[in-house]
Length: 201
Image (tube, rainbow, N blue to C red; front, side, top):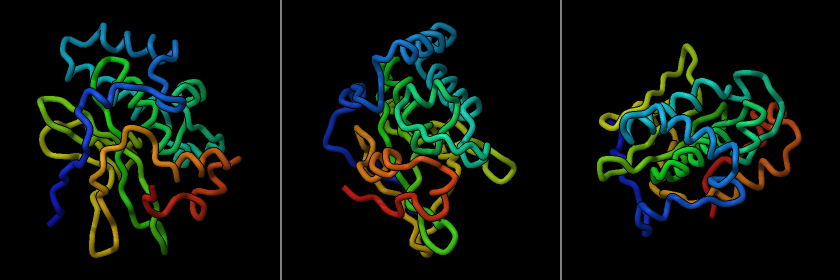
């Protein structure tokens, strides 16, 4: 049986509305797209679902698309329409925070060939609770859906294989993710052997 996810944070939900150099809440194009989603959404939950579905479906995962371009900042992901799970999560967090929906970054440690890899996703604070969502992108063997009840993530973890659902709610991207992507020149070249294998502070 999977261990229930219990988010951990010392910060109030309102803290997860701020931006930085990567989660570019105030970027004009991020603001414009966020307004578009909000305008066509009757409720806050509808807005979160619409935003999630757009990032999941309209921004191809770099590996699935065989796109070597490196993206890190939210505006880069939006401009180039590609990104790994981390980058897609950065864009989704920026768009949701721009619409005053508290959004944290989350991580999992997953089996990846003979080793492990760090996987990025987000959590939204709606209905007075945190709910994880995974915008990685679906394919025949992966189905992730927006849900405020039962989690429907891309990858359930298996602790017996050393996989971990890290409980921390991150305000900013994990340093190991930032360092890895900033130093990369080809995402496909590092996908199997060069990505972070665990969460380090």
